[in-house]
Image 1 (cartoon, rainbow, N blue to C red):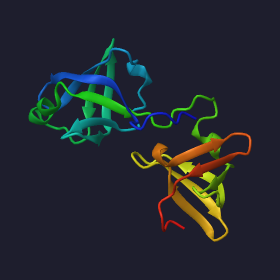
Image 2: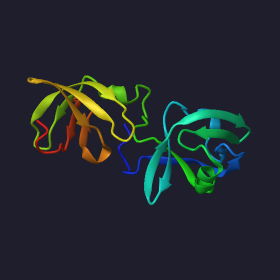
Image 3: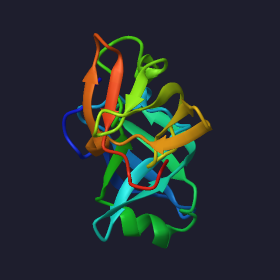
Image 4: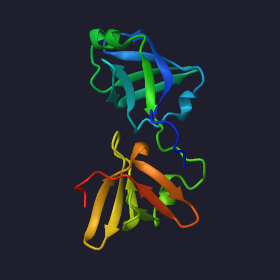
Length: 169
């Protein structure tokens, strides 16, 4: 599991220019293959220092460029506003092993004090707020799964230790 770095967004393209009057954009790719984009996941474009998610409604690849229509970008004016901006994807939980993030399912979750919380039974990749489902003695609980909360991952004991928000349990 890659636990280094707190910024989970990776720039994959740049909005080169608008195309037509209906808000279509041309993305230019350099080091990222346009065919590797998962068009069911949002892309992010920064506005006022904050990443704003956009879902792709149409996507046509032409070499190292793509003709893209984003939900909520319907006019030439909207498209012109994001020309020149970077396009990012969330890669916060890319895995180094072939099992992916689901490799922590079945692990035991402990808090910062070493107290056992329960067993990790599922993972949900909610954009911007990934969560783990924990089976506790009182039932199932959803906890945020962010890199900055992870204290350690003991592969031998299969225990994930996290600094969990107070009052969660």
